[in-house]
Amino acid sequence: MSAPEVGKTYQIRTFGCQMNVHDSERLAGQLEEAGYRPADGADHPDLVVFNTCAVRENADNKLYGTLGHLRPAKDANPGMQIAVGGCLAQKDRGEIVKRAPWVDVVFGTHNLGALPVLLERARHNAEAEVEILESLETFPSTLPARRDSAYSGWVSISVGCNNTCTFCIVPSLRGKERDRRPGEILSEVEALVAEGVLEVTLLGQNVNSYGVEFGDRQAFSKLLRACGSVDGLERVRFTSPHPAAFTDDVIEAMAETPNVCHQLHMPLQSGSDRVLKEMRRSYRSSRYLSILDKVRAAMPDAAITTDIIVGFPGETEEDFQATLDVVRKARFSSAFTFQYSKRPGTPAADMPGQLPKQVVQERYDRLVELQNEIAWQENKKLVGRKVELLVATGEGRKDAETHRMSGRARDGRLVHFSPAGAAVDREIRPGDIVETVITYGAPHHLVADGEVLSHRRTRAGDNVEAGRRPKTDGVSLGLPSFGAPAVPATTGGCGA
Image (tube, rainbow, N blue to C red; front, side, top):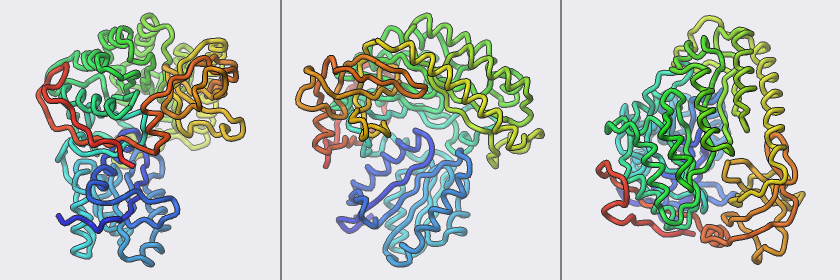
């Protein structure tokens, strides 16, 4: 493939989950290797890439509406290219160029690495290129990545899903679960840490079924413990586990590995056993709550978050009350709550008992009110507690007005804090570590308005200040093993 003209600019617009956010980092890494550079906000990019989601409500309408808004820019600049990838592209395939014939490239979830070639082919042939594969061509980790954050990084441990939840279209779009080898995961973690990253989040559709492909049922807990031996790695998180596959060895690894954060995001979806069965969620509410009891016994300070769907087909008021009961018992620190909506191609879309919008809305409002009250009660218990914060970028809407900065505590809670005090070394930057004391608890955040107790400047903070973001090379496939990789990890260095 001939390289594109040096200086062509790109913009990636990402919709949906953390998987897509991380995939977009891989897309950016490839484009920059091919000679593109990120577009300034004021620029009209030469290339716009949409990394789409098929799970969110009205995802297709949002995409086609946005594509429509881009058509005048495309007409005014025929050399501009538009590419559509991700889950909606995998689902809609050639339909995208039928509905939006000004799109140049359509690619799916299984061939992220094909984007530069498809762009060049579309440019050369002066016609749209649509390439959708039915199975994974190249594991995304083998592709270079331009990371969004200088201090926190995603590390994919698997792709795809072996579950068959009736509301979810992900397995049909991302395929069966494929696991990376532990050695290459640790190589990528070490590469990020070498770039100054302090925190990694291990990412998979079902992280605690990791290892099924190479026959090790305790592979995920071993991976957590192995991350504990990476020098310079201060925080390890993971998302998302499935309650049916959650095992005691994972809880033990979380409790016993110092850099693994005491935070657990575990989707509930419904508190009704009948609805869970209709969802094909292979656990029941008692099993779910028993896991939370074990987690809190091992880690009393653990913050637990969840996902809940309201208004699944056939859900009765009794079913909904069962969900409220579990929420009261679970005492989540926060919950991502969703109103059920049909996803074409899922079994639930054709189930009887689709509920009227007003019923779903009324239940949703009651759930949110209850969860907000619980979260507020739990957060108020933290007033007076000292917390360690990894200072973050752009997580507080009111920061500019109050002159506060924001950070994440080790348990994942968002804290707005006053960046003042004798302990402050010059200035606090995103990526630095501070300690402070909570002075106020709100439902969705905490406030620390006292003086900072300690401030540690970090390489991540240096990189943020200099405007550098990590770039990591792809990590090639290796043999299943734990511990230090046989060949030292290489990195692409920090770029501007």
